[in-house]
Image (cartoon, rainbow over all chains, first blue to last red; front, side, top):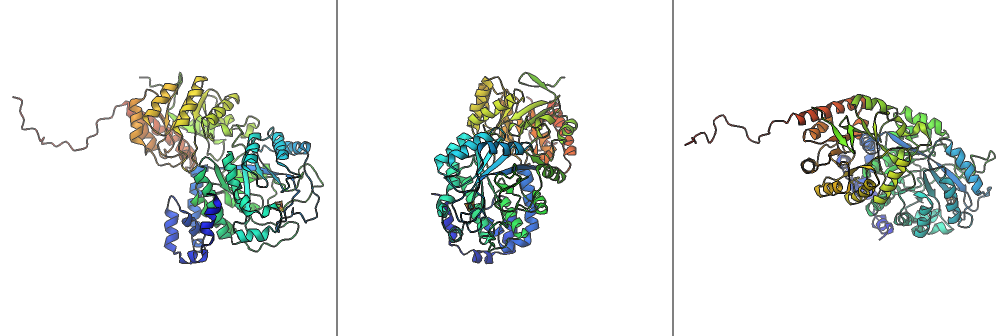
Length: 367
Length: 257
Ligand code: SF4
């Protein structure tokens, strides 16, 4: 059994019929429960639950304090390469876009690492486009070896790997995985990924589980919000995280709820996801999985990010740069998307303290 | 009478142990220690960062405190041992609270892996305080392999639900020769006092103080409650009777022949 079967159990459901049958008292009852079922979670994602955002926020705030305290973990992404063989319709790095392709040499990786480490950060997330030729697993491994000298926790956000490849990277020092399914709806997924290896829906869908089997200690999942109806995408993301937590109880799970950002190529997201929608997703997830992490990237604007601290966020990126070599090279290459919160680590640190929270730089070390 | 708590050959002056993982700022720690009187302070080794003094939680612990690093994040005995050794190498001393958790939903400790880690670390000269689900056989085993105390949970971590495992903790207190320190679940000073009244050697509190609106006032209240509870225990409270003692006894008709 894999998550695909779980997905299939729900994918043919008539979600709008389910939403239409919900009454106010259902939502109130669910908010009062201590352990939510999958369908309870779905109910909290419904239009009906929008009226109850404040109640959900109060509970989400309380649960987050209880489990995580007044702390926010800071990390930053590092783009190693932007070579990509896929043609995801929404992405600036896709194979048909004309842009300077670049891949950092190990010396350049070290130079970027030194700059980032100088800000005090200890958690880093490395990214590549999908190109087994340019960014091979052994290249990622070599980069990990370099980064280990500067960081205590290394995450990967790369193309889906086999279980053995995950095990090799864990052996080299990687401890967390971020994997965006992009779209859980299988048809939408196929529409968004017309060509390239990424078109294999199930190979991507089952990647997080392969990582868990290989011994990954933390796994972060997400759907790219804007590609399809956000309520069902949020539901399947939560369902996926819940599935992994049930089967791999020792893995630390979390979600990222990224919204589409402008980028080279000018794709217009078919679905608009408002701040209110995003907040509803975060609150519903917190009530469904009180101990799940919630990562807020610099795709979101400063004001919203600050409000999300009290609503359930547990991890935030800071001092982000989505261009390969962007921290060392003044004439930097094109980024994957525009970031919205450009504040550096020192500023984010002050901001988090000003909200009565502690920014945490080190929360794990490879052992 | 001098009422000393001895752990690993060291005298501990306060029976309130303070956890540090959830505060709004490390700056608060010295004041919380000061108002609560806590002497033993636990820090997660995963958060100790010798390279970055301003953000290194260990640097905020006052010098007269006993540092009790914990192995939070460990999923099995092997990881707990590795983390404990990293802590010692980072200058955190020889005390270690073993925390082995392989269940992210409830954060319940894995007693079996905890025993394995305790055995190995005690043999290596650590003063080992294992966090456990209250179980007499486990506590006995821990005693046998060299633990310096046992730390049963009162309720799940962070739940502030109080002494839900009271009956089991009482058995540990009656049957173990090791100090029994109630860790996790204590949410109110009254619950801390209750743990002390039934004879716990100490209590460890973090979430209840960190999530209070005024953590300093709450830390002070916990310090007072732990002292009051301990004094009550030492005063040997009078018996509790299930039924009222009638002024006209039911057996008053019996006369000594
Ligand atoms: S989203 Fe990833 S796989 Fe798709 S085109 Fe962009 S870099 Fe390549």
